[in-house]
Amino acid sequence: MKHKLRWGSVLLYCLVIFYISSLDLGEAIPKEMPFRDRILSLSTDLHIPEFMVLGGLLYWATLDAPVSILSSALYGVTDELHQHFIPNRFMDPYDITADWLGSVIGVVIMVFIMRGFPPFIHRLNTDIARELRK
Image (cartoon, rainbow, N blue to C red):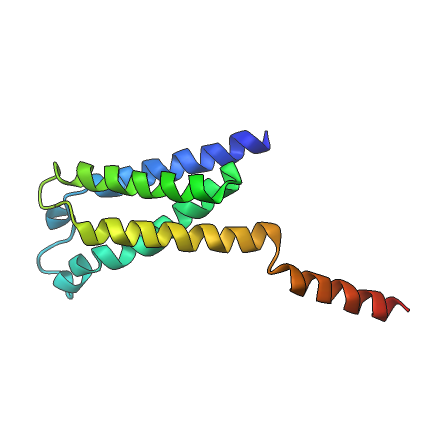
């Protein structure tokens, strides 16, 4: 059951990314909206947190950091290829770089969360707890 939940989360999140990438941002954001140009320019900035989540979810599902980073980054490449065919969207190498960076950060964070922070801190906490019990 846990395995299905983890992979289901990955699949659902990939579908959300696909849907967002399918939007024609020129039409989705009204021209009279304040700060419209700034919102449109945030696209690359949003790729990092977007792919941090995907990288983290993939690590949660696979428990394999290199596979998670590679899979997430490759999904980023296919996402950019997909955007090439969407009106008012384009393939951007900076977005691919941001996707990769977000994937790495997300996997590193999940490794720390799931395996614990560096082992010496865990040992230190264990030693302190042992001393407190005495």
